[in-house]
Structures are given as structure tokens and as C-alpha cells.
Length: 128
Image (cartoon, rainbow, N blue to C red):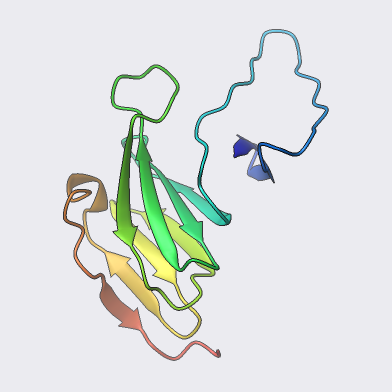
């Protein structure tokens, strides 16, 4: 999977799809992560963790570049078995996941990647 985020705009293309991108002089482009399945949402944590949501598989992954070489070297499953996660957001250290009918909050997520817990339901009346 290739993802480019700039000025709040994200472009996502599967690795097997041909793409033509022109990069302005002084900028670069590289593959950060692959094998993410049906990734639909992304949120960036304060410590650089990239959270990726997959709608069809109902999962959220956390991708970390612990040695700062520009490539993912650690992956964590934050949640699985979710009911169509439609949006994710990172705010003040917590990860919020909007499912079809509810919103979950994973408290202090970047310090709990190995054992994130189930997430606390903060709202349960979204129109499904």
C-alpha cells in the first residue's frame, strides 16, 4: 500500500496498481508499509505511530517505525472483530474508532500498543 498525506489530503493506491506521480524537486517518495489489506482510514499519533483502519476486515492496526529509517518495523493489532469501522481519529493521546453504531476510545494508546484492551464505548447511538 502506498499512502501520501499532504495538506490534509490522502492518496491511497494498492501496490499492484500502476501510478504516475511527479515529485517536486527537493521532495521524495517511498513505500512506508505494505500488506495492509483493505485499509480505509489513517490517523497519526503524537509519537509517530500510524493507525490504519480496515473497514471490511473490521480491524485497526498500529504501525511503528521504531528505528526512524522510514519503514514500518513493528505492527500491532489494536482491535479486531469491529462492526464496520468507518473512521478513526487520534486526540490527546487517545484513539477514537467510529463503528457502524458506536464510538470506542482507546486511552493512552501509544503506550499500550502491546495490550490495548477492548476500548471503552463513549457513544452508542450512531445511525447505523
